[in-house]
Length: 405
Ligand code: ADE
Image 1 (cartoon, helix red, strand yellow):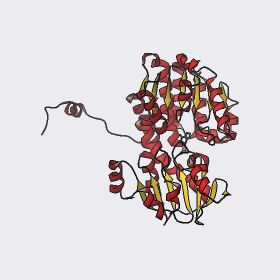
Image 2 (tube, rainbow, N blue to C red; image 1 turned 90 degrees about the horizontal axis):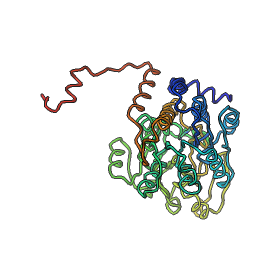
Image 3 (cartoon, rainbow, N blue to C red; image 1 turned 60 degrees about the vertical axis):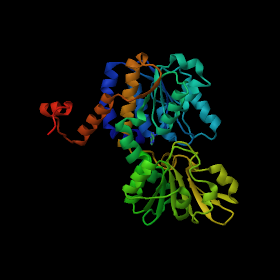
Image 4 (cartoon, helix red, strand yellow; image 1 turned 45 degrees about the vertical axis):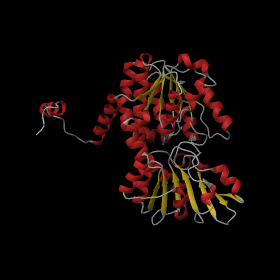
């Protein structure tokens, strides 16, 4: 086993605490699970946990550039696991691996970004009848699935793992907050203190990034399209303005919107010389890479994950990680303890699908409350934190509408 997997496993106590039970209750035994997740050490621990519960696993990455190759190679040697993940050169190779993962004829899909689920509904429709259901890891995937549900094309139940409280409150906020800077630090080795950092999007990921940028000593500007979130950002103490104005003063622009074309190449012509652009959203559509390529008069790689573009006005802009997820391409993904909680939710949802999925109709489902609570309870135990419990009198008070003063 690769040391990075061992290290992660030793720090994933919630998933570790569930392992015995997942094996003992037998719900996952002989279930075929196709997975498309960023294949790195923490993901390997999830795959191994599911395999040790008797599931047959086929896994690849959900992004062409986010595989940790030694981890993938180690994973492919584990009994019960087929791993097709590589750092893919082309999008053709990436899709080929997704198809291979589906060739096992899955009972359950575990997806991050919904590419796998989309394939089963388009090019691999012959598999639809065999699928009990799926889990979706990320905001972007859930947005796609809700669009599929609305269009009436979604054919099986999908758990919205992203919106479980034990997922998004920690993974999207503290996970993205820390790992985005992990990626930026390793791609640039630049200082954040005293710089102006523009964070596009004030969802849970944007909040985490803005919070950490402030902690690192940056002057933080938030850009938003949602009026409520804009007010929240302002009352959290950040300046808020349109992206076109914000880029003019930015040293760093970090996108976390889940949407495309967040800043235009034309707006970037007015940016400061040397501005650094990084994306923390799932797809590489937030920063308009093709537009920048067309506009630039010169392009060169200046560090492993940093490309310099010289614009016609002689200003330089630096694009990190090819506009893909900076935290996974240039960094190591979310911290281990964060993915422990997210993947504990994934494992319990997979078990729930195996046990009860056939009773569910198609649609996007919230993660059952008991799963969130179970993961929270295990995490509290690991942290050695005790909390209070309601007395019978308090329960009665909360359940009653008559009792007031
Ligand atoms: N590691 C594995 N999956 C991840 C994700 N979705 N985000 C960040 N780090 C990860």
